[in-house]
Image (cartoon, rainbow, N blue to C red; front, side, top):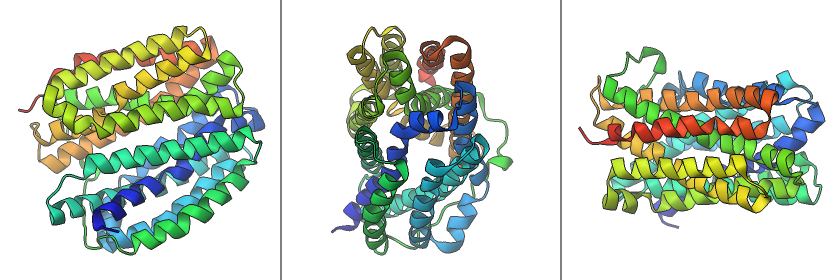
Length: 373
């Protein structure tokens, strides 16, 4: 297997266990007797864990190298991913999700460094394709999770099966990944106030990252609460959402070359807006699934577009710009569960997901910030 495909398959394998968790969220909510606000607080543990880990992840990977980090944190992440499935309370669920997210953050940073190293070694573009493989892996996990839920297989037993397949395969691939890749220290705590242009780029990505996180966390809840879908059927919405994300990312480079970042960014945000309207007013499951497909298309390439724009935006340096962008984008994943959970508690899940409309409208308005400067 070539070095390029070892990296791609590592990206594919990493999110399978994470994806399998998504269709089980309604089941865990019922088991712990959580109302929407309580579920939102628990889900917020993941982005909190990510944001805190960003403070030291770069230094950690620098200390031990990308390959050793991947080999250490693949089993760590897979162990951590089983903890939310057996958590007995809201507090422990939030802590488990924070631990899971922390291990994921370090692992994904090391994987991205390996992809960057291969790009430089082989003088080819790999990053967008790697993230497309990640999306396909996440989608595969959600499909497996939905299938296991449909057959009433306990979440922890389904997870053990996934670990038995993913862990030895991932370690075998990781042993032959680049080991010398390093990352500059990108500590969010030291980030200065962003330049207005960079702030516009960050807010553009904030709206879409909030949307992506909300669809992953709440689509199964939506299908269950609105249409009474069973555990297996509830997972279909997030599966088709992720499929549309993955396919759009694979085509993202060609679309950007043809239409330019501004037109592409604005058009996809408008497509996402159409998806939100369909979801909020969907009369049946088929219409809702179509809405999630459009939502996935709308949110797919916003972060890659934002990274490219941030690299050329005014600021201290390119690394600082990307660190700022990453921090604000991940803040969307923190705000999303809390905001949607609070609105759902008061007015229901349709209104909760309706909050995505102003977020994507903000992204559409700020798309001109993506222009190279």
